[in-house]
Image 1 (cartoon, rainbow, N blue to C red):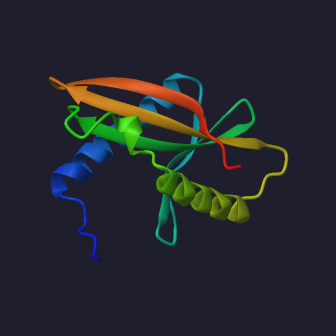
Image 2: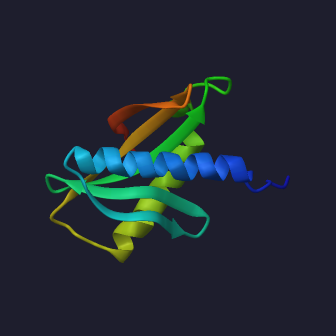
Length: 126
């Protein structure tokens, strides 16, 4: 089975969503450490920090609800990919004094208006 690259429209929507998410996080006291961290085929959209906690943030953006809510796209398989990318990040940038978690920012765009849902500590790796 081959996978096709995302369409130009989907990439643009995703990039715009990540910009909105980064702005939202910054406005809510997060320091953005990096964006689009890649390790092999896995990627972390945003790595941020607040109150000595590193937050690995997955951003999902949807235009309308035809394909479900944005946060519904965070499947168990996606969670496993995020964990692998986070492990790689922690190996490259170890900091034993900080804890970490996985957060999700879901952005739903309807009538050109974005609605942001933030889920702190969205899933556990155990």
